[in-house]
View: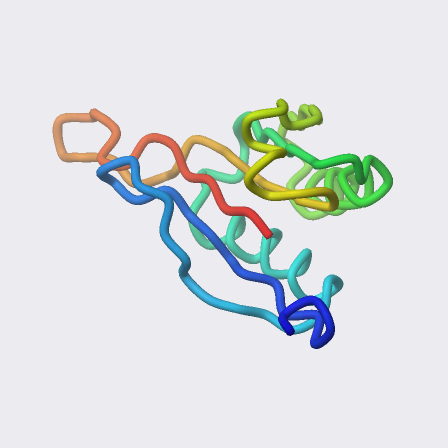
Length: 118
């Protein structure tokens, strides 16, 4: 049913390391837009960005280009997901992962690694 309606789950990794659903978006274009928005809200905007894909390199390239245009200081790497992740997500999965901007007062990262996926 979700496939027919083009409903895409938005997943994140919690502070405890668990995969959690944080929302649903209708349509692939909107889901990809949400990945860019997630990066804008949670990143330092100048660091390393990892874009993972499940056999959809053109979408990964497009997202990478949008990140670079909006955040010129970001360094973007693109990689296919491995078979273990791919077995759980299926084809056409996109993810964005980066070091977050949130830090503790002592300078340590409170939530050092953010990841979101559709």
